Image (tube, rainbow, N blue to C red; front, side, top):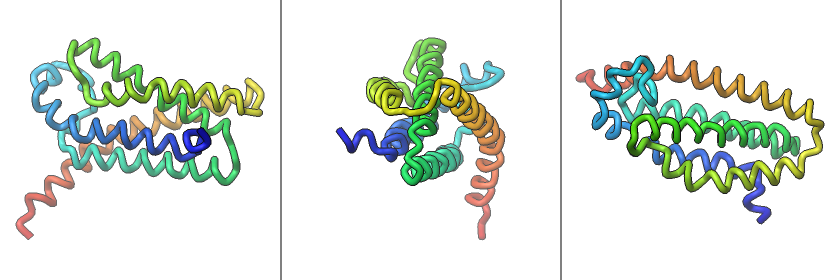
Length: 173
């Protein structure tokens, strides 16, 4: 049980979930391009290139590794709990997209498998936590703001990353 309560469990779960997205997203976007083209904000942003999407995944993975390292060194279970809740809450987005599409959406299978694990982790860290409710809520607010801002920034940068990668690939060198 101790292994599952390691501060390194969140990056492991994240990368398993994002492997599903990285593998399925380019093919899925190609298959559903007509429907996605009618949306003002298409699912998974404007990027269709798997390599560009993977750059965003790498950036988010790096953040989770840094958070896990900080939590391991400082034994800050409140920070870890806040990131667990932020990560688990993004599964709701996958379910919403599935309902809207009435079809499979990349990430929903791993989200469904991981949700019970995340609920258990959240409950476990909640009981282990020593922070007051006010401190926890402050942590959670800051983490959600950080995660949301990072997601917005990455979704704006990924089309430029995609263009750069495609330009590099098409350069005859």
